[in-house]
Image 1 (cartoon, one colour):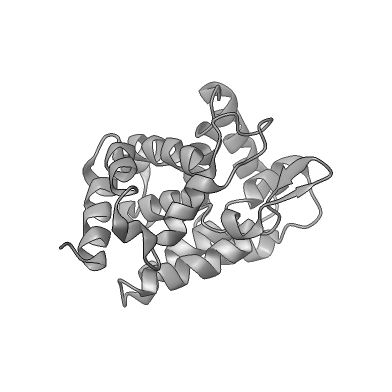
Image 2: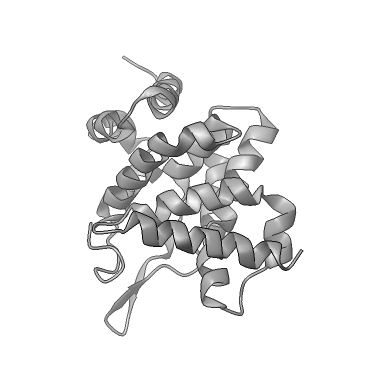
Length: 204
């Protein structure tokens, strides 16, 4: 029987080399291994719903599969494809643990913060490369700051984001995140990402 470590390596190979990693991921997500720690954290995304207004594609898993496929198209622009693709897969891993229904609205406040901690624990099960683990975790931790900056929200930590991430890598992940929604407009989202970079760079 294939081990969890072998599945991790297989996932990584498909993330790095497939045009549509979601095909493999959807297949493997139905395996018994996805019921075991920490792969069960990925499985939990399949049963976590999102706001239909912002995510008409449905579950966190459905969104993540769209993001991963977008990331596969964009990874040639990344300075570290391995970090970038794992961040695409794990960016919303914190949503199952933070999703609540408040006044009829589905929210997942602080899923980025919880997700960063979960990303570290997830990757530590398979890798001892601290630089790799921290780089992925940091992209997960700060990925929501694109929205915070664009909307001028007060609870962002711009200096922390600039200290702990490569802004171009974060912006590339952000583009894929925003494109990972049913009906997303690429031209509009690229303008949003350019605006994010302009706003952040102007604060340097």
